[in-house]
Image 1 (cartoon, rainbow, N blue to C red):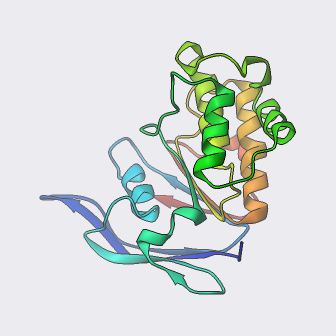
Image 2 (cartoon, rainbow, N blue to C red):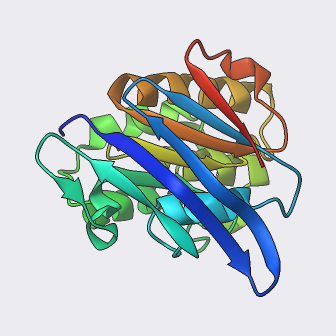
Image 3 (cartoon, rainbow, N blue to C red):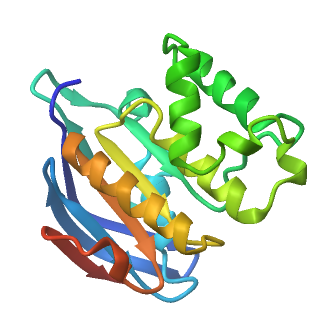
Length: 207
């Protein structure tokens, strides 16, 4: 895919008389890690949903641009990966079946060896045939992160990605973010900056 840049111009969001954020402007280019910090209810998740094209701002705009064109909201999906608390894996399916399904949804050629290697990076290979309904919350979170990054999106949006992760899971997250930054932009919404990521090019926004 072509390199992607993200531009946000005086973005505001309010519900009735409640303002979540106002006149927010920033930009990001490949290699950037943008961390959005704020308390619960500050608007972090809403901002990510707006960037993903899943929700409209009250005012302002954001653009996803490649060398080819500026992409309208409805056409952003192939360029974006999202992992958020309200996005769920199919619990009646196994890790292997979820992965296979997402290969098809993303129109990617399925390769069993590659799929096994991906599950192994997330410490899920030995649990590949376990239904996700029987998996731990940490296992489900690692699978969600894996599925969000499956198509190597130029823009990866992670909402509280460290939730339910142990030390091994945190290392997997750190590796995933590093790999994603080599392809594009990563935006993380969190209550606190993730020390284990130790980014060298970070923009920090406080909501």
